Length: 260
Image (cartoon, rainbow, N blue to C red; front, side, top):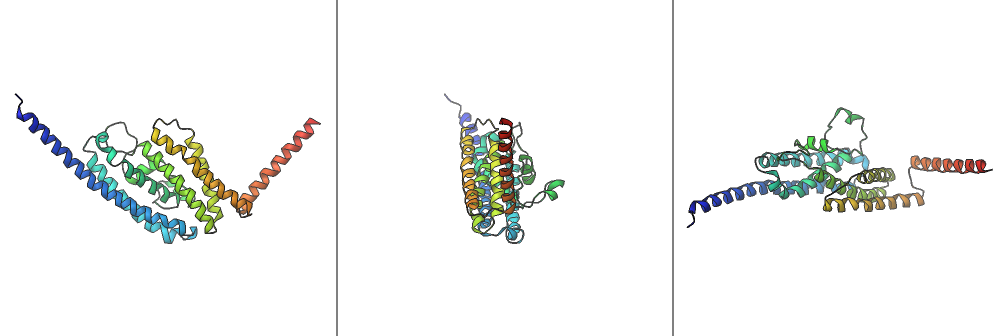
């Protein structure tokens, strides 16, 4: 009643599918190991003074990121031979974590220069764009056709992880006596949070992660508030605060004169 060739064909397709999944999973497991190692190296930033980043931290970070890049490129080569949306759920979380490590490494002053302007950028505090992340990994970003790429959602999710880690770094920077770094982090996460408010996100999971950025902002604001109470803010910040107070006083005086 049923042609046995039907099931023979289905069996062949199923076996081919299993072989593809096994090949991808092997690369993804390697990426997971690489990311875990890179995160371990980056965790040293919480106990490393900023002046020692170039010698004690960034060389190891860049070497670890290079291993991630090689694995992602291998994944892209294999995955591009198969339907993207059939398999991308297998690697997206690990790719987000890899993007996060590159974002943090670049923010700390690592990752090779990607453009001619990079030499004029500050050593700490650089935010890589989605396109620059694609250049680091050597893979396309946010493309329309069905091929391996870095999706916008993966980049945005990595940004939320970056704010969480910087919130922790702000607290540890103060412990190391680096109030200036805490102030710089405060400005950065506030600008990042403001940028997120411009997005109209449809992805429920991503929207929840973006909503959580405000907690990182509050954490850093608490650190800056404690520094201000103890009079430990950098001189530049104190001057800015005094200038704002003077400007406010002048405005109040001007309003009173206008009223009289």
